Length: 194
Image 1 (cartoon, one colour):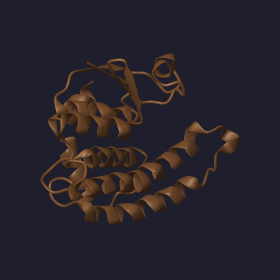
Image 2 (tube, one colour; image 1 turned 135 degrees about the vertical axis):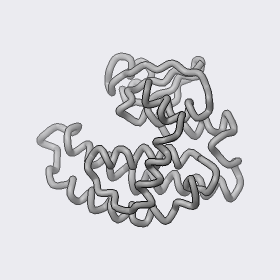
Image 3 (cartoon, helix red, strand yellow; image 1 turned 90 degrees about the vertical axis):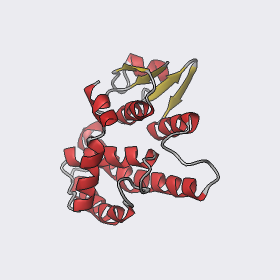
Image 4 (cartoon, one colour; image 1 turned 90 degrees about the horizontal axis):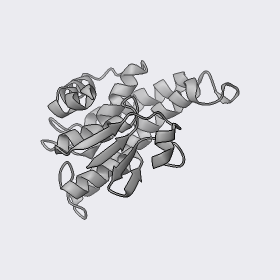
């Protein structure tokens, strides 16, 4: 059985949602970053981590990609054009959404006060807004890649929810509708309830 280490207000939620979509059993250790539980799985104390037997995998994107590949769901086969497009979407989301949100978050309350740049939030909101306007064009149907849910859908929805909670502007109705549709999924609701 899998064990997810990390609290649900972090990227650990991505892993839990993926496991719910896959219908796989798992336990959840609601560890905060740098806690003893987190450090027992990852010496850096970063979350999430996934225990699969004696092995530990870190980084939410690496974990959900591993799970998708292992179970042959929510992914396209390696070596196909569809997989290359999927991977391109994954990296676009990480580069243009996740990283922008992370920089803003770090400067808001994670970095030591004397290392924070207080005005960086406005610049990150502007950058996110520009990326979001282009990202809305990526939606090809019910999901990002048409009628097939894939790894990028979990990443994109998590980032859109994070942006909403951080009061980043999301003005394109296509993104709002997409995020609402994804939050309506039974697996999303089950992960949220844990």
